[in-house]
Image (tube, rainbow, N blue to C red; front, side):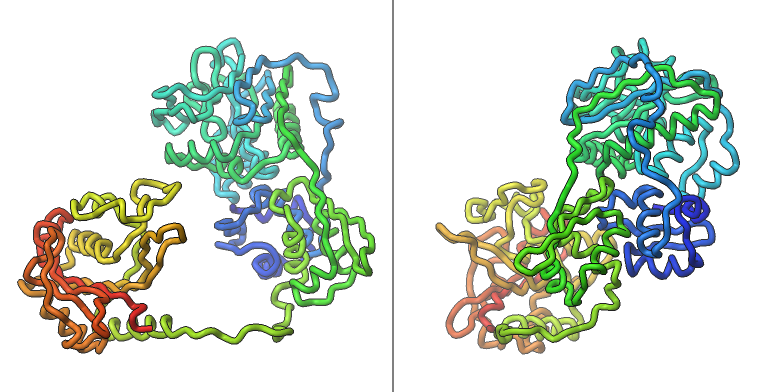
Length: 565
């Protein structure tokens, strides 16, 4: 999210040099990706702060950080344009209120498509967007300031100027604004008329209804769509957008109406006239009130805040507080601002106080009370020694997923009934937990040989899983080593490496035979410790390697590391 510095100054009285704001933001609010003379780019990755996807939300945050005042007010419904006059409705039919709980459409006539003023163009460019024309730019400017996406349809391209919000038919197609034909599924939500799809709801409009040079009347859309359904559409079509990002983070009804009102007022400045409007409202917008305990706040943060400090910090963030005493402790009923969708529990409020106070000011303190002494870490100490030893001998450590791929599962020797199946796998590639690590190493060798690597020596230490009747699965740590050196006898070099590592001794390698299509029948040995088998050393069968796409010999070791603890 790029924040135009000049635009931000229109919304909040900074009071300090911009350099000081750049210093404080990462300490009090959010990290920065970049800062230039024109914009500040917020690092939104991993943050659930929907409010920071709008300039007004950022202005509130900057004001709280600097102790400055914002230069705008929260307009309420009574003052919205459409509440000042009696207007007819635009025909709208929302067929699924769960996927679209709130939908507004406004008809604006008398417009003329032109280039945008230089001031608008600069605001858009500083925010990382390009100017299209004055009609389209208004929707983007309002989205950037209020965080609410809007979309303008050319009214003459909409059959009977009637809007239908529905899901797509399987195989239905739509050419989006980027000129690409999209094949849709029955889960994708569409904005349509009685004859055709007009746009992908909350994602991108259709080319068949876009604003063009001869557009004079628009149907202006403002809506709230189900974020989960929308995210699925964005993912399946590979179509991320600035609008989609905001829908997925969450929107509020009041901010939507404020954004729509602001857009209509700007269109009026272009001699546009609001002639009809419809609002379909099935959206529950509940006020959130959360209890906050002073004792709990001080215990979690480690600072002895007083009542006035807490109220000062939270009031700066537009929380409303009502205090009372419970068993000698101050407790507040805290009303959350409607735009702070990330605040849901007491700990969220505690975090707000702590960050405005300054995390860097919180002193380190020794833990009080009794606590358990450190338990033995013999196994993990052993794992560290093994890793260091193998790396020093020239091997590369890798890390693979704890699942078997479909390639591994297709091996005839692999019995799926002995594996643990995930109840809700994300895909077929994550359906079964691995019982050994070495098959995953073969897949790594295959990928690397395709990239031109000829000598490969890798290892992994990780968990394997096996069923346990009537109980949770057994888990154990294994070491797996794979060597491909281009020779006809890679097992010889692997033995040399293992003996030099002192991980196993020659006496612990016992001749054994194996009847399987996975390993070479004459090049297989068991690894024993205290007369108990803890693993194997083997060469992978050439036929199995061929199935994996590998045309050179590969030696393998896999042992149970718990035997060393």
